[in-house]
Image 1: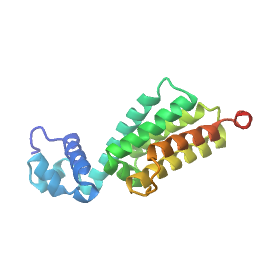
Image 2: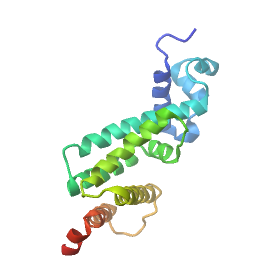
Image 3: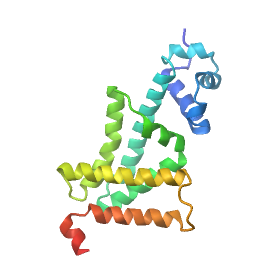
Image 4: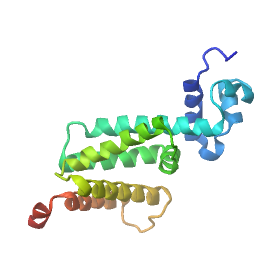
Length: 191
């Protein structure tokens, strides 16, 4: 019989705390069992093992990130929405680097995972759509924005920026370059 108070959600909660503190390498069934006060085999009453737990973690992180990202861009458009999106992306990745790494590498052929992924990507689509882009241009632009911010954050977290120039200034520059590039051609040329 499952321990009272322990549920799949409680196991994911414990796993999230371990992921934040120790990274992916520290995410073991033993560590989760210790954190929840049960024997490791007892976890199988709640999750089918570490692969399923990683999937559940990815879904939780994607959904929470989509909610947070959506909240910061809500009611904004154009450059203001883009700046809010990029800034929040950077903040979340810096504050929770192990979560960021997990969702950037995760893929599961699973409807819940697909829905959570789409929910997060749709925030980027909403931001970029505010520049008047549609069709394939919209897809290309979203990919470019995501690649730029993910690359910047990955280099920043990996200590890839060693020049004495302040990274905040570089990030502001990136934001300006992206905003300029997202403007429709006639507007960008006039600027």
